[in-house]
Image (cartoon, rainbow, N blue to C red; front, side, top):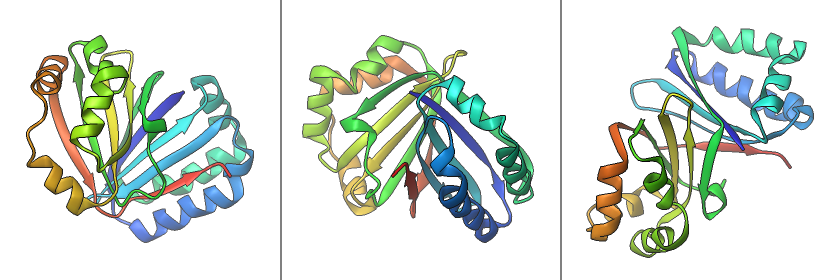
Length: 199
């Protein structure tokens, strides 16, 4: 899987939402390798999109299509200043990556300091411990870029459950793994996320 994060300050959120909905209806069905996306706006007007493709090659093939370029030209008009992109070929999922029924999504960004330990949180025993401790987490994706930056989407059933879960103590080993495997972490909350996926 390939993940691309697209983030920027948006001053025309309604127009952007319409353009994203139009992409889903008109361009998405024929987009090579497209799997789905998570979208949302933060309270300060930042737009966040985490788009999933089968591979980087398929994503680039889609970007090269004339109709995609035309659509994206319109999208760029909805932003103030440049857009930020993060391309991640190295992707790990928890619980199949999440659910389009999630009511709240938290985006984590940062720098990987121990890739193996970070991935272990979404796989095997650590994943079972994490899910047992935080059952309101209904899925996650972890994308790691070539330069060590990462983006993680964590899907929750609802924000109230997520906030309650934040107050609980994590298992010591899970907490130690988190502390040892990432740095410079920032959080972005999508209070009203929406989703698209290939039918």
